[in-house]
Length: 269
Image (cartoon, rainbow, N blue to C red; front, top):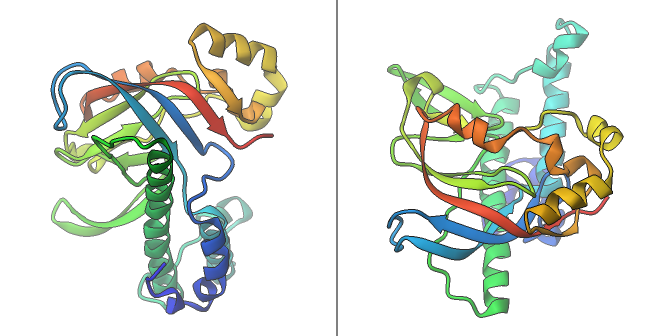
């Protein structure tokens, strides 16, 4: 929060809101979970074995949402020539005032999102008096200035996570299935990227229409998962099979450890 929030009029006006929401998780698919981290062989400075782990997924909260909404609207207004179905793909020139404003605001939101994670983990660890042995954090749904094929480009990883050579990442499944700590292989054909998670196999609306809490509870009970709260649209049956997803990207990442959720907290309906 000590960064320069006056970089745009928009970020300056959102700083108080950001302060209020700092250290919170948010709705949608954001979560905090306790579970077992299984390390099959010694790595990451730890001996092989099973550890208590805390996995969280959060973002830049309402502040980031407001920034994305604002600049998406500006981009659409600057490109009235696009047909309706292509309006969501409107863009901002990075050399323009609007483009630079969006880029700088996005970079600030990346720092803010990382701070959210850090505070959630720090506060829970302090509350428990726990000794933290390992901490892994990585961005997704973000844009980076990178060089690929000798060219300076902007890589936006929507639903994807960085998987450069040796880069650690986290690929979660769902509230009832495993997630994985991975190490990137730096595959150039994927722009050094990998899947960010299992991914949905049906929309939120379809999940609400097709499943009941009775079905979800049975699925979770069978796997020893206690659910504190969540929306019906986040039930694990609405997601793809995480192990199939992992098997499809063995050329992009190697698995370092497996996380199995045991206690799950998401925003309620």
